Length: 275
Image (cartoon, rainbow, N blue to C red):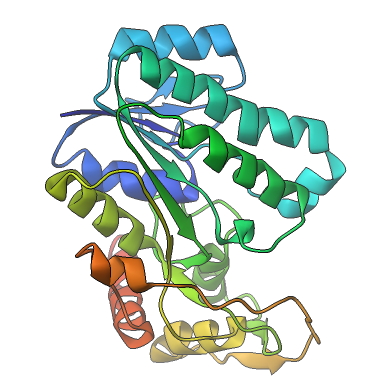
């Protein structure tokens, strides 16, 4: 099976790419950060380039990860956000349809009752993805944590690593609670989907428990002796409870919060061994 992964240098994309290439023939793309030497450049906002690239690679499955997930940036640059997050999806789906490729889209939990520019680009992208003729999967992760080969992106877990390695202050909010998504869980699901040949489904990916950033930091960093301090930011962001029933219904992997923390602590131990 030949697989094309866009955004293979990103925090999420690098994790998916590094695992899938062990099992399948995988081509990964990048735009500004070539994390792996074999990655190939692709401007996903250029329709002609996308069409030519996909046609030349002829993947059986396209996994579309590339996006700008910075909600603040999207609010300030709505036209660019649509171009990067939404129009690129259209180009890729159209190109996939020409070669009868299946499509896996990394969407966001933000599509659930959210009115931000970023959320709207994901909502519209999901509509586009559902036009994939050969079959599609839409995964909606929430607040993602876990080790990725990309340790430089300003993501929550990478801040945890800096707290540990660079001794930066570990002060985290206790007010807002959410259902975290284990980064490894995303690839676990993709591997199972490819094995079981499950298509034309959309669902959330998270653990069932509600936790705060402070909870995550404390449970991940405390085993390494980091003193994590609480801070109440009075964050009134809405709290959503994901419907995780499809994971069980489709026979897909699921994690509890404790299982996720155990896995992440081991990932941190493995990471520290490489330094």
